[in-house]
Image (cartoon, rainbow, N blue to C red):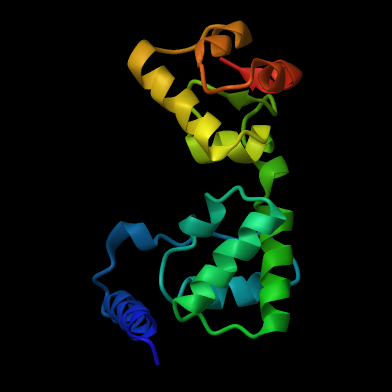
Length: 169
């Protein structure tokens, strides 16, 4: 067995022991998952190594959830191919990009508060574009209008103009 796999399983076991020993603290807060096929599987598998907030904060496309789940399996999560499909479907349905926009009262994405990951999920930006938006905002302050986003040189202004009705500031 490759060293990387042993190391991942060892870390997972260590986290589980810390949790069972009551030493995990608030980061392991219980989060309620929405009902649906795969909920129990996600709860058992994902909470074995980390809190469910990792799941509930995720806003990934089905393709990205597949990558994340495969990565977790490579790190020691015990899922067969059928279970992987069920988990990916559940995560994509309940924690996909469309759900990110539903997170705000208006259904829009606040570009002055969203993380790069949230911008990718909700607006379909590349990771590079989303990170550039966040870095620009950190250096220069908040955006007031969608036109201000044109100042981010790495961002395709036509792409953001097409999404302007989904933005709030």
